[in-house]
Amino acid sequence: MNTLTPQLKSLRGGLIASCQPVRGGPLDRPELVAALARAVEIGGAVGLRLEGLADLKAVRPHTQLPIIGLIKREVVGTEVYITPELEDVHALVSAGADIIAFDATLRSRPLEVRAMLEAIHATGKLAMADVSTLEEGLNAFGCGADLVGTTLSGYTPYSPQQDGPDLELVLSLSSRGILTIAEGRIYSPEEGRKALECGAFAVTIGSALTRLEHLTARYVRALGLPALESQEAITQGAPLAG
Image (cartoon, rainbow, N blue to C red; front, side, top):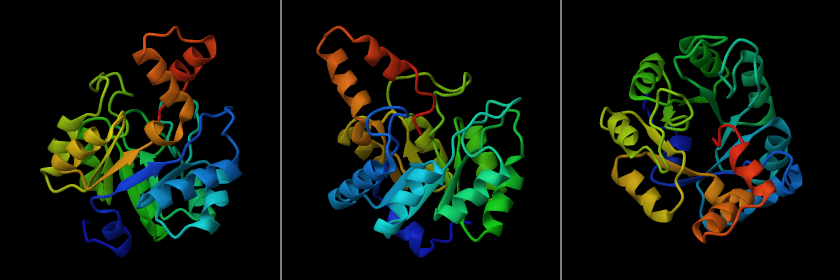
């Protein structure tokens, strides 16, 4: 754990671009996601975070960047939503993911965190644990997570609800020697820089780069303009931006 493989070394101190379109939106086409991925790579991204097998398969042939792959789907009886089950892990590996991201919260779940990590490592891939609190991050790290992301802070009812990145969580995790990916509600380059100053190993940017609907709606609100009904649906109806 924390042995820096070449893939991890390539991520250190860099920007990971989350290319996840608004599902059902105009950019929700694998070939367009592949174009977004190429664009952010040209801009200097050191890694990609992709959701869904179709998008992952579309992007993989066009880049050598490390890809963090995940699947979002609902499972009856649990609120765990990001790569909830073993079948998702194996599908992501087959599609070409280098790092498997999964919900590592301490909520009721289909498979315990340690078992998920063991299954991911058995495939030869690295594991990124998405958490919402320090307790969850420490648990995931203790179970063997290669990376811990602050992705789910604000998406569980017991984590801080705030407009902006959870830099306190970034600092708390990184100060304990955990390779921490700052992710979630990072809207500006300045916030990304602050996350690195708090010890983040790397920074993931999603909506501020690749979800044009969210980015535009944020400007519309800041300008004091009335939101269209479609904008309200976009900004309120998308669970888990990670």
